[in-house]
Length: 215
Image 1: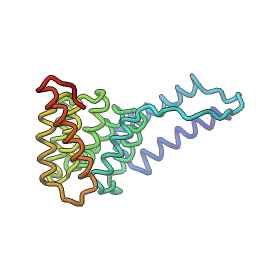
Image 2: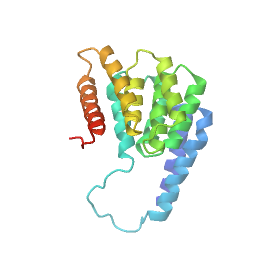
Image 3: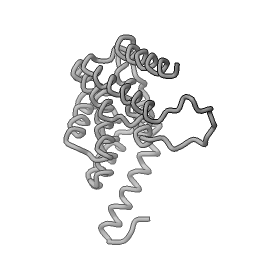
């Protein structure tokens, strides 16, 4: 019965993503692969015949990606419109560490609508997470497309600066963030976070120049 339930759940999840949420057809393979991976993990690790025993929760895999998804929601404050159902699917994949699958879903979304800035931004973040926090040419291209699609959107410069900082391009990140700070309204919910990041970045850069460790 447990196997039947697992297979039916996987089929139902695929049908929901493909036909109800209308994920792009080119992303169906990625969704199917993610579901098959889940079934394979169940086959390797599940023990349906063993009585349940409560355990302390473990730290989630892909917590960094989960933080990036939440941060994008906080910075944009725009929500995801119904037409961006594939962004919702991609966010769910990214939260579970399936960055390549998320990027593939978003690639289909941006092919269908090249002006979808939210999808470009989500793709850029997924690509950065897939590269272990490194800014790659593909993610840089996605950030630039996101900025071109929505020039007034704070998300692209905010997250591009974050990716630059993680990749060691500190001064470039500082320049980008200071430019964003000049354009940020005083009541923006991300203002304090942005100011704090700039102060931390400036301290690190100053410490590197002086040869002393940053505090």
